Image (cartoon, rainbow, N blue to C red; front, top):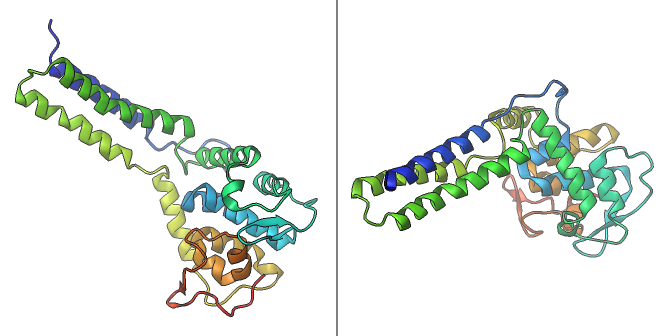
Length: 258
């Protein structure tokens, strides 16, 4: 039987269906217990950089890191009591003052972030890494399959060529499926309701976990509210130090902060 465009369209549809199966949100594993901590919440909201930012905030609150030369962070004490894998990886990577972009490239920090990814995937909050990357590869294969069909069967009828656009459109749509699962989006929405951005900086020992969760949920805005000097001098702000507003007022200029 001679090849025509229907064969390639069918093959593209099969590849698209396989990608869709891989992108289905997984269910929490049997050991997925407990609410995610601030670093996991930051990972869900803002990715790997946000998780490292919250780890640095936690270390700064312990008094073991501080801002270094402009745009860098440095060690300010021993982290003997730190047990969190990501915080330990970050602290041991600060043998010299470095910026957060450099921290994100350190192998031990990347391994700790991969472990945090795996924890979130086990809780059904992120699509597992291998399935995610495999699905993306399959989605790239869909238009390549259609392109191969157009090259091999240049004289295909217009109806067959038009039908070939359907799997390509499906691949484009699936490409924008987020790494977060619906459960993660629901969790973030509920946490934002439970932990709204406060009107003033939180102070005192009891506020330590609340500051971390605030930064995890609200990013730069919370950083400039609670820790303006550390955030600016340490280069932690994703949008740069000149972002000027927190809820319509000057961004924590004049506010006390470490």
